[in-house]
Length: 260
Image (cartoon, rainbow, N blue to C red):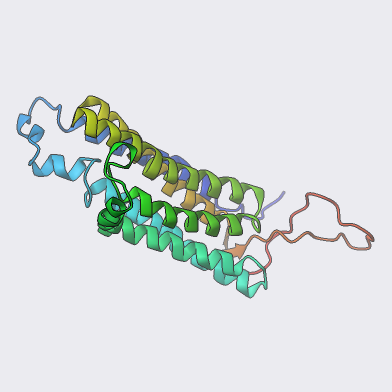
């Protein structure tokens, strides 16, 4: 009978739990202004509405995204350290990705991107899809983030690659795609139901993107419970040559844990 401890399925737990949190946040935003026992919550200045409103900054949805991105950055830093100890070429890309996640977390917490609005207006933004003019200089930052992830995913396993690419795609689609479309609607129609749908979808995508990036960082390690604690091992892409074999290595084999 096999009594070896099974690896902790942390990635699956993050994906399921994170998706649930993302959906709950959007539902709370829609629900708090419609409860019959507290009509005062519908007031735009209500502290309860401000706390749950996904269209605002520095509230519960923002805090969740900040925590997810900061945790993704911290775990990516651990992966970078383990990769360095294993002399794996992905160590530096993992470290850059860790700093990228922490920078995104800081931006989400302090809304630094909105301070680029004046720069964007100087570049011709301020109407239509660029109604939020920070989008224009923000695209330069987005390109740098994409480059950092592209360099990393070329040195990771397929599951990690899929999670990181999906997470980045969700973040960019929400922060730039739906943000631009929603602001165009805001300029033409004002605050209404159409704009609210865009904002809710944007927040959902951004939160899911942060969840996927966190899961991607976690997929870079293998967590195994032991009799005296927990072992965290780096997952390497290095191919393993079977003992006694010659010539080319068998395609598709990925080595097991390389360090702990």
